[in-house]
Image (tube, rainbow, N blue to C red; front, side):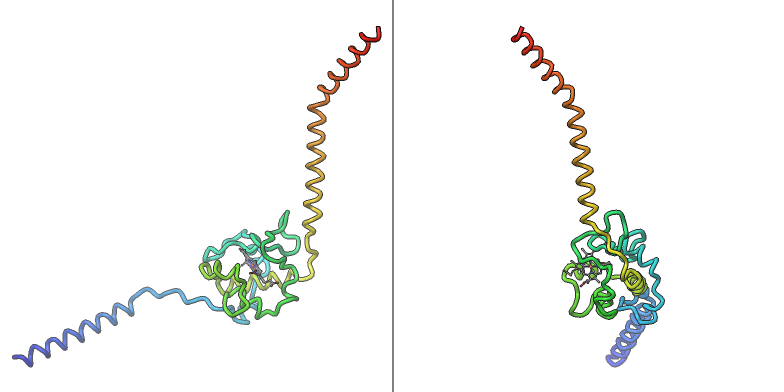
Length: 190
Ligand code: HEC
């Protein structure tokens, strides 16, 4: 009798184990972890798509922030991109493709300490990495936008406009003051 009971226990354990294995097999497949883009993927990178991703015209699949929040490239956008990160116009000439990939795929020791924590939370997919690299390659040698000149130009225009507005507002007042002084002087003289 005792023997029978333990046999039953064994069978039950075996069934539970089988059921667990079955359920595990049925679990929805996890998305494959993202790694660096392969050289084939990079070769197939789409620069135009990369530009849209960079500028934020289309969103990254894992909702990372668009690169232009911190970087500018060539003369993209009216005032270019942000200035927290370096201008990336010629980055492809300055860094090897594998160094670029290390930054975009977020692994290795040349990570950007600013970008790393952000894109660790929101990793770029392999095709996004490839498209961005294609875009950065295509931008090499583009004339970088002269942001300083634009800013100076806008300041000059704004100053001129303010001066004109103040002049317009005070024109009448000045005229009245002058008229009062002239009439007072005339009275004193006469
Ligand atoms: C939150 C701001 C920020 C965002 C967003 C950002 N970066 Fe950066 N990036 C930086 C900073 C800052 C550096 C300089 C290294 C550092 O201090 O971490 C840098 C460095 C780089 C470099 C190396 C440049 C060099 O000359 O060493 C590359 C390439 C780069 N970023 C590409 C990108 C791309 C592509 C994106 C979009 C997927 C992006 N970055 C998004 C801030 C940012």
